[in-house]
Picture (cartoon, helix red, strand yellow):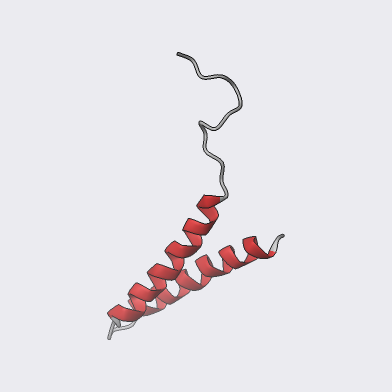
Length: 63
């Protein structure tokens, strides 16, 4: 696995753990929850950038 892929997966896992931890406590800290969700979304965004579009085929378009 490349270092970028490992970093993306770590961001998603760490963000998810932080978000679950912040939501599980009785005295919920909103800032920790927002931070965890932000880290999670950064990881998802970084992975989605590397997935090619379904419409980016090399075949000519049908008009």
